Length: 107
Image 1 (spheres, one colour):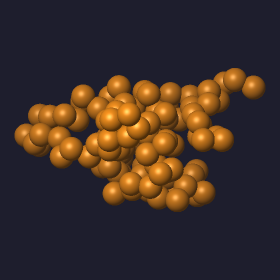
Image 2 (cartoon, one colour; image 1 turned 90 degrees about the vertical axis):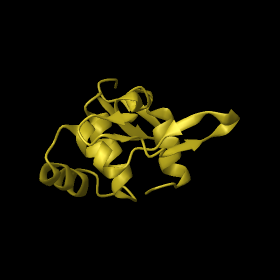
Image 3 (cartoon, one colour; image 1 turned 180 degrees about the vertical axis):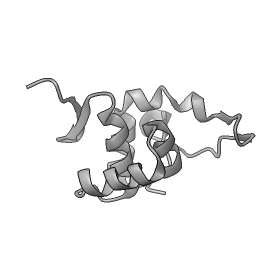
């Protein structure tokens, strides 16, 4: 599990992902409550740090497709979680640049 400052910042600024956390608070499929993979950030704000399996589910890709995309389209990512978050945020038209998510459609 990536708990680096970079990943925490990426997750904190990924508002779209933070808004999806409630989908993982309880898993009907597996019957388990969330494992509490939150980080308490600045000012006591909780930040959800999605695991690889959660990012793969959010991507709506198979494991093989997800792994390929992480390795081949985001080779500069330091961890699989960072690459996976980039894959998911791509679906929202965002890319990680200069410590923030920017809209890829904006020049």
